[in-house]
Length: 493
Image (cartoon, rainbow, N blue to C red; front, side, top):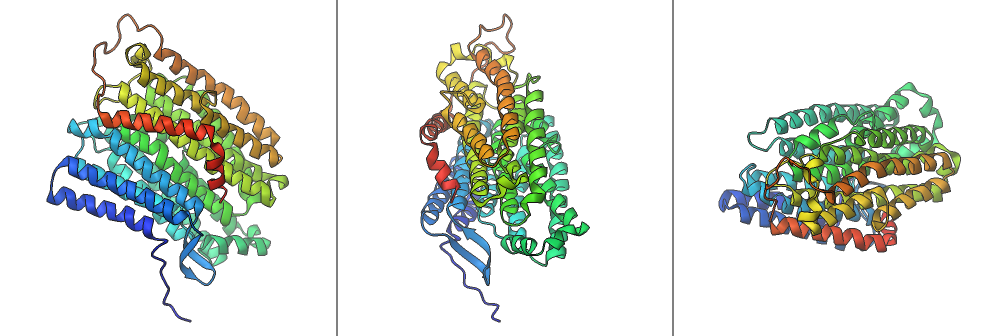
């Protein structure tokens, strides 16, 4: 048997572009040593990565690094969607970081290089076809974020957030790697499709304690990455301590990566009748705890962080339908996976818009502050506050935030099609609970300012790049709200 493998360089083009961006940023910072040139190089690379992924993903599915029918890299429509979203999120976060970098709080070269490295992991993650590629890609996405969270000079909160994030992520990675090793010991396979086929053909393997432990460890390890309850405690402290643009990246690209990794192993490798009940329980706990704790938050970023935890529950909810036989038919499973991916895409667009608006409404280089700090912002900066209000209403699932509304409708419909009506009711109840804090923050934007505001005359960010991200994210949220089927069609591929 020949060990020489043909390599499909076209399939790898998005990865080449993302990794090349990191190298070029490093060279630009070394040779030119001008922040604007370095950031422009990173931005151009992110745009090129998104375009390359869209072009490659627009054709037939491409595979490479294959041994027989098993491939380690599979680039199709869904992988292209993930790569494009991650690249555009990276571009958006770079633009939001302008005021932070100009203030000298973080070195521009290292900052842009780490973001480009993280983008590379996200691009590979969507196409991963085996456990090794999946875990390495997920860690490539996550590892640079440890440094980015703590990269703000002179900030104790930033350093504490970085340590918290690092320790929890190391534990999560250890669990995932241990689960993958045990799964390999039980099945003798690493490719996701091969593991799934073997467990389907030999149900006796599921009776082995080794297999049960392997499945549990892989699911729980990836649940850390998604910030699912009870593996969520790191998220609020990390988001609040990180610079605002990095918190935006954590809440969007990093969470999307965790969702994609979890979907990959659940869809292709792990048995649905085993993972379904676990995911249903995680979804209920995550959305309920996230919403209830968010009601008590007074700091803006912590409120968005707990909201992000609750949103992770909505993303996981369609997978809970796999717990029932009706949810494990081919059509029901495909609908559940498409609903989870589509909701994740809707969520990250609205979340980026929300963080962009907070950056635009806060002083340059400041943290997210408290809800009271944003009180009356709609009277001083009506358009910026309107964009934040639209994003919050979309996250709540109310019109005119049609993207969020259709996202929740998609999740509920997939649950009803899978026979999990009880879980659809839980989603609906939690959506009502979430209205309280989303509308409270939205109402505060147009409330009369307090008699003694914390920073009555603090200048807000005037950077054009921040305004551009805010406008683009808002426009994209409106467009996909009117044409949600486009996202669903790509997610179903």
